[in-house]
Length: 431
Ligand SMILES: O=C(O)C1=C[C@@H](OP(=O)(O)O)[C@@H](O)[C@H](O)C1
Ligand SMILES: C=C(OP(=O)(O)O)C(=O)O
Image (tube, rainbow, N blue to C red; front, top):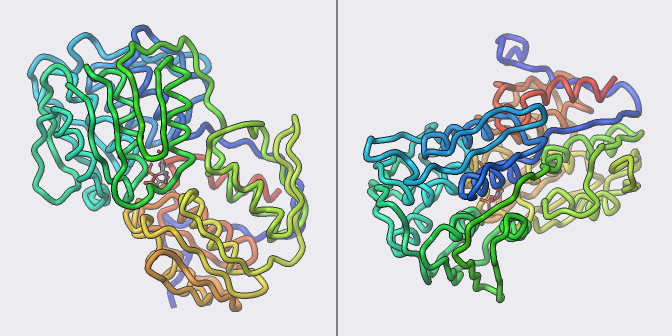
């Protein structure tokens, strides 16, 4: 049997010893922070981003933008982003953009490279070399970009900046990731003709992230319209002197799910009254799972402790919540099914295979379907939970550990993609 204490890069997820009574604050939204940085890089004047996320993905985005000519500097409450200098990424010197395993950096920055004059190589972790980007690169080519890749439809690839992009009308299959569509829309104000995107193929996942893109473009002064599956962004000089980033509601998910397993109450402070973040859907899910939920000036207060029913959930629009919800449903009264998330096979890791493997290894009966998971609860036991360099698998393991002694989490530091202080905040919540 594996000794879960054996290695230093292990964290034993703490078991809850009684009902919770905690107030928790989580850091800024990854999705909002990285969109704000991109839009600020395209603006006509410096933009002050307040309360942004500081994590691996956010630093990778600032590094990418700096390589492309947009400098940034720390301020007392965030980051001041200077626009890409005229001419963008230098004047011909080759540049490398380091992607790590950040989908937002890989998908949102290539269009910006086409605005400069340098050849820009995009590459990152082994895992990002397996994540899809082909339809976005094809769309950028048809809008005028020159891009070399090896034909696999994944990094590495090189964008040859030619000082701008024509833009115009393009068909896009964004069914593998909503980020392809967001990428075109975010950069389009800087295209000579703006962009008209017509979606083809299956429905993109993560609809709230598309709404977030449109909302933030408007906050930066862009003209954006949507008619069903057609999107139009006009060429415009962006401007937004200051932008305040909301707390990350997907990062908040394991914390607000916790009282369902422990009883007691958790208040997530700073939960916005209105938001485009997918995590806000938890306010609908939690009552269906037996919790009481209150949103007021103090934040989102969740009280739990009753039985959790087995449920059927289509998570197509909120796929990034799947790992923690799957972990929670291992404690339901009956079987559950999650559907609509085939695209999770192209996330940080193949999340469907990873969750089925790791949850089953600790005693649950979890099997993969084409587009989701079937979860049949069974008595769980401790053991090593592999995390596949996926931050949300660390969070899923923490949820399991609330009720299971000896869940050893491999490589907990990988949670630093979105929340470097996750394990200490989790332990503090447990008191
Ligand atoms: O636009 C964004 O900020 C994101 C969109 C979603 O990607 P997919 O549509 O690829 O799932 C989400 O899962 C990811 O965490 C962040
Ligand atoms: C899919 C995710 O990340 P990325 O931004 O790398 O796509 C995620 O955070 O769940």
